Image 1 (cartoon, rainbow, N blue to C red):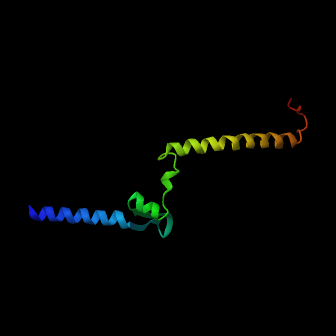
Image 2: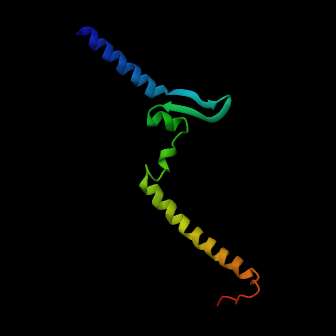
Image 3: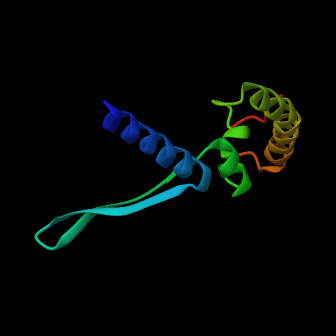
Length: 107
């Protein structure tokens, strides 16, 4: 029983070290048929604590709407004005287009 407790302590130490320092696992998977490469997947897995990831500049989840709903609301609020500007620009460009022959001009 002492041995099991010692191994769980070492596992906890390893996990703490991995989360503190971070670990990168990289690999490539290729699918080929008769020497013709059909698909290549490049896999990069980074395992670390959120704090360690932030320190390394990997904090993509803070602006992702799935993980941070408040970020999505502020992004949508900012994009509403852009949509109105875009709609006005499209209307202006459509007004400049020549009317095809045989069709009446829209009112």
